[in-house]
Length: 411
Image (cartoon, rainbow, N blue to C red; front, side, top):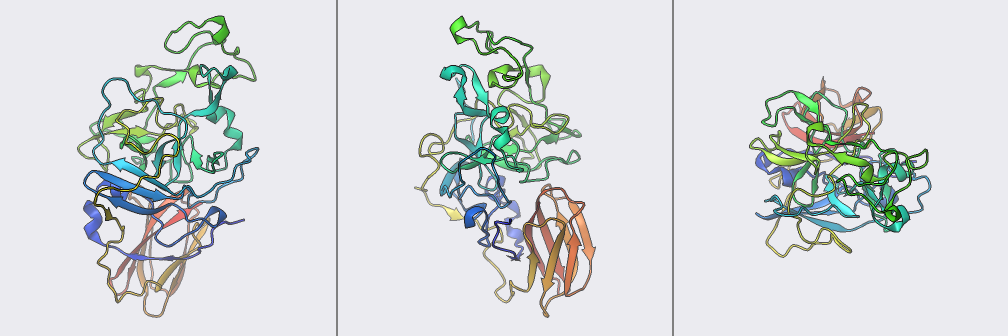
């Protein structure tokens, strides 16, 4: 049963002055139409504010796509009322890198929390052999690969496959989140050349499963005492049941131990350090899935630890509105409507008597045209059968040469 109560988007007049806004400001999926999702809660990001130093992202932690059910998980998603603080000048951490702890370690572009690969349990409760959440908790994930924590915080430990069209090997993946050190997180595909001149390839994790049958040593070579041994590898405690079953080898993949690299991306033509979510050749999630066991950069305060994620700006900030503020007051925003949203197979349009569409163009998350249709009908629909699950932008040009933009989700 659908949890969405909003069926229609009021489309927004496009303002080209936003074209130069930095990625850390404009990459967020804002809910400008009061769209509601699970439990009747507002979805995606409610507000983006920024200064010269930071971006503040306010969100409920409820996505715009349908979520649930969660087999064997008694928890219920709830409004987290988060405000995450993302630095605009991320810096590499000097000295010992900071470990990614339990709880949120970053935020997806739709305001949903990112968790690392661990769950909260370890063998014999010694925190030596730490359980892999994907292996142990995987049966409780919904079809979008997320589930709620005991506090109601809906989150993903791995690739959020309903957020974007992740299986697109022909284009560089989009920014799908930011870690709490301020560096972007991309989907699984990037340039083979770190200078941005190569072909597109799947970013391969530098981690692999160890060749062990007994858990008597750690990946760094530490020999454990018998009291600290883990269970032998068997049909219950399969290889990969614990994160210590993995070892990092620099030459094995494209990414470092943090699951990132410094490279040129479409959004950062001068280069940036960037994390990538990782999948294997069969398109299954690959360890460490998102950010690795440690962050690359310096963590912004107020985002991690008990009670975190409720930052209040103490500096002068500007509210970012994707459509800009210089809207044409004579435009009737109910003139063109699209529905349903999210949509499965067909997206419908309704034009009032004052407008007719001369062109309809749909762009994927990489900005590539995936559908284009010329018409002058007062009502129309387009088939979404050939589109992958994810977020899309639609551009409608009227016969009066007015341009309207909006977003919709294909589920």
